[in-house]
Image (cartoon, rainbow, N blue to C red; front, side, top):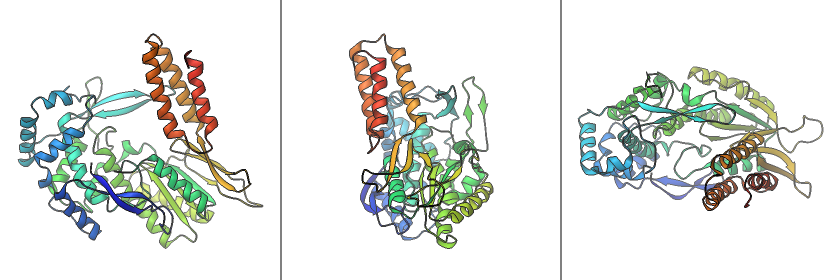
Length: 418
């Protein structure tokens, strides 16, 4: 999906002075001119992009697909498609050029979540994945120049840890007294297709690219019982192009709005950190936070999105002082953020694994051990070791020792050889 090069400003603090992320650049020389134009002018509209969908790019897209990924409704795996790869890609390229390419409905599967709930996941066919990956590579050349530094979700060279570090920098060093912990209700399932296509056309005017996106959105979903469902809202979670489309939509609906609002209407400092549809807004003044929340409700309503009123809350957070309300806590990307103090009594933003995530992880280990206890101990040890290391790598941050120790304790209670 390209490579990172150089250093770019972090983009979370008001003055945007903390560099820690790298600027992404495409590995394809023919796309660098597109990126240069997008970088040179934020008003540039691109009318000719589809010719970049070459056989070589389609082949590169194929190589990036996961070998063991579940197939779509046609049952064709990556290995099956690769048995006659050259001819298959030539045929696919020919259909793209002659506009005979047709998007196939996405196969829907339901993944069990803790608490007995299920999460829908979409499985496109191999050909749709190949074309979507290629289109995403082209569009990234444009939108990576538009996206703000405080956006971290599903972007090349960015991850959750960078978003968490950015948020801690804001809370620790910024002028923060209030935090707006917001939650969008079923964002991926409620994106309006008409509004999304209108947003895309701010930068992309190539009818062939827009036609492809429209086909993927209109292809519909095939439920496990074989019933085909077509909707005018939502992007299937699991589609290669879905995260980029969601980021583009939120860039115009949320990021640009907050960025302009804090420069034109805010009386104090205002900061934002966003990872996909999860975002936190920090402010110096309560008045700014309350006014911005009111304006966001109106903004989201105009684009047919809704804030989850039960999960969205404005809390006091910060170093505090005499008199005011006590500082609260909030969760972001699996961590509970707490306004605490270090051993010397100085203000310190502390992070620990959120109670919900920790309970979920512990229960998942217990269920896994119960399910696979008949397997050889050496095999179990290898799998559990991988799970333990993965948990440590994500949640192993300063001040979170007790939580990760509890997680390791769940291993000791579940298997005898630990």
